[in-house]
Image (cartoon, rainbow, N blue to C red; front, side, top):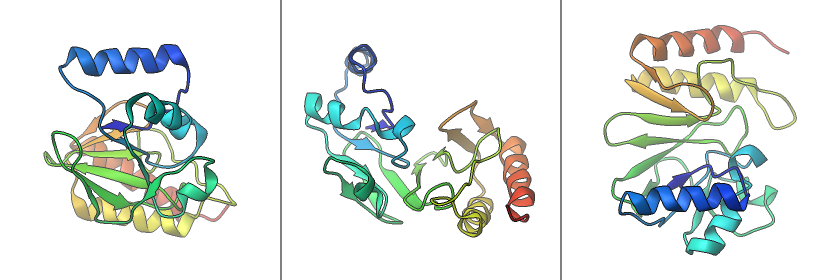
Length: 172
């Protein structure tokens, strides 16, 4: 399952397919943390090449000019070799999802990373982002894989959550 194929370029998609094939796999699903172009732009071309369905969060499909399956909190994608639990994580965008893996890792997209999360109107919602961060804290995630930046583990995850909670307490 490919997460956030943001590059629609032929060279990128060729390299992606080659990497999957080199590992003995094939692309059977495409999931989007959200539908910003940097995360979703390559999804339609990748589906055309592989036949893999595209999944996004509630309301995300309305921003795209191609068909996607919209799913909500708690849904599970089982198309690949390991289940992916979908977590609604609005804030950066209302359709934002994070993906929980069976080892406790969470692919957080733009909801949480090593750098501050951009939460701007009209799509962004600081109150929703704060709720997402509180949920992340409750989950006790041992490892996050953000959409941008390095993987965070252990105390670095808690530090990123607390930094974002402090920032979300201020309007603007």
